[in-house]
Image 1 (cartoon, rainbow, N blue to C red):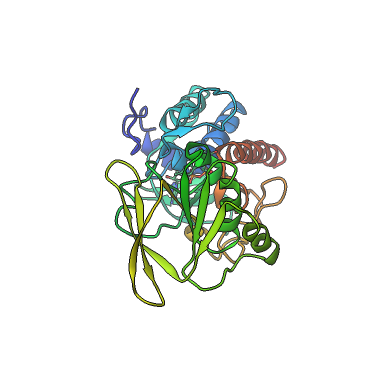
Image 2 (image 1 turned 90 degrees about the horizontal axis):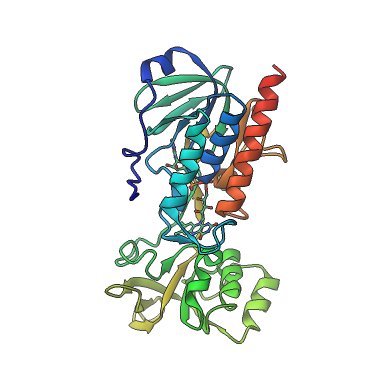
Length: 325
Ligand SMILES: Cc1cc2nc3c(=O)[nH]c(=O)nc-3n(C[C@H](O)[C@H](O)[C@H](O)COP(=O)(O)OP(=O)(O)OC[C@H]3O[C@@H](n4cnc5c(N)ncnc54)[C@H](O)[C@@H]3O)c2cc1C
């Protein structure tokens, strides 16, 4: 089945008035891999979770054409296809879905309050799984060629660039780490950085500089990503001379940071300096009864498999928390 990521073809909306009048056992914020996995585990523990998916059922995974590194799919699986499978599995065990955006939370007392575009809901426990968004360059060609040569994830997409030439945009740790990873596949990796020196740590810099497949283009910014059906080149502007040149390439990997979707929790629980929700090994946040999973709490791994694992763990721990109340 072809899927509509706005969620409107995914099952029935749960009965809204009834949901608002009763206190839910658990509300899950986010319908990406972490939220959908948490929904499955919470549903199988008979918690009848209410899931607010926001605008993208399946999250970032649904926006990915093929996922080749999620176990169980030797031929790979479509991002929207696996999202729908996650969704169906959770729904089968009683998870309730609302395709609604959470605009506010009140974590000051239990039951916690969750306000969405359609109303206010209450729950004894919350699982925050609102994910993160890779920062975009915001240049012409970027959105149009996403998944056709433009990528934000080397672990995910590096394989598609076997024996090809790619550029990496960025100069921090992730740009260099992912650039080095890309040399396992690509013939040539050019790292384009807007400054004249890198921000990444010294060891990573040494490693990248001694890698024969990596070259650096300093003091340059990408002005445009060029290509009809797929990426063919990037247009670079030198910050020193203002000269614009075209640099042929098969792929553009952009690593200029991620922004966790955590603005609505700000000031109510512990976050790190980049806005990632801080969790312990049991996925507990600094507020008892509030758990977090997936990329909103994970600046390190950012994969479907790891997000799904965190979602499962958060739901298991939320179940234990509710049992002990
Ligand atoms: C282009 C691209 C390709 C990728 N390819 C792969 C790959 O091949 N393999 C792999 O393992 N990983 C891949 N990833 C990474 C993977 O998609 C993510 O690690 C994973 O989706 C994170 O899951 P998550 O549930 O934590 O967050 P997300 O997927 O970001 O989902 C967040 C969810 O929260 C919802 N949400 C956000 N704000 C609100 C709100 N206020 N109220 C309600 N809901 C809200 C969103 O609608 C969404 O449903 C890729 C990522 C990108 C961007």
